[in-house]
Every structure is written in structure tokens, then in C-alpha cells.
Length: 175
Image (tube, rainbow, N blue to C red; front, side, top):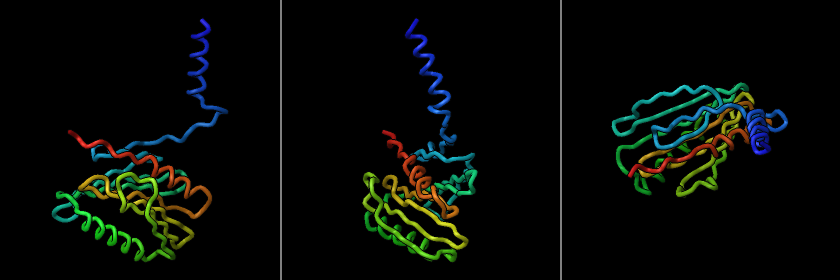
């Protein structure tokens, strides 16, 4: 009987959260594309082609504070050599730095990204008091992934971007 009451109490705490605080809802996407990531609001998803050898998948959502969260995966129909990966990363970084609304640009190798020495973290100060945070990485031998959060440059934006980036999980390759 005591065990049943204890389990009921634990269940109540789990349902209501400690101190009444609850985590915001998340919406997982990307499972059919070799990864999962949690968006903070109902996602918009689209698939397409970028040239003859690339399939693309993009999912985005806008949270209650107007911040835009996005994951874009580009699947190349052939394996990417180290040289091709390095060239692609240079091109993407150059493109982000050349944004017409960019006021400042900072890129550095990403830390804590397993099996991807080319991963980069990018922060761009944008016009209108906005800031963008990007994580660029290769998720397997044929996939480049861009994660981004853009919003008002205020307290909490960097932390929300970091949490979003950390929710990204590569799925094991099928046998």
C-alpha cells in the first residue's frame, strides 16, 4: 500500500513538475532523414532538390518570442571526400558572412560534435538588433546539416540556440 502511494506521488510530481514549472513542448522532426531534433513550436517541413545531386529537407518553427529555429539537411547522392567537405564548409561560411543584413561575423570550430572535425559554430550580428546562431556539420558521409536560431539579440537567445543544437541526434545508419 505504501508503495502504491509512493508511486502515485512520484507520478503526480512527474506530471506537474517540481514547483509547478514545466518544460515548453517540443516537436521532434527529421526522423526519416537520419536524425532527430526538437523544434519549439509546430514545424513547417519541406523537401526538395538543390541541383542534380542534392536532396534537401528543411524544418522550421517560430517560437512565442518570434525566434526562428531551423534545421536544413542536404543529402548528396555520392560520398563526400575530406577535400569536398572542407570546400563545402568554406563556401557555406563565406555565404553566411556575405549576408546583406550581417553587421559582424564570428566562426569557430564547434566543440563537442562527435566525428566531425569540420563542424563550425557561427554567430552573426544582424541588422535590426537581431542575432543569428548557426551550427554547421556533416551528419554522415553524404549529409551536410545546418542548424540555426535567429531572433532579437537579448538574454536567453544564445542559451535557446545551445539547447536547440544539443537536441540534434544522429540516428544510426541502417545495417
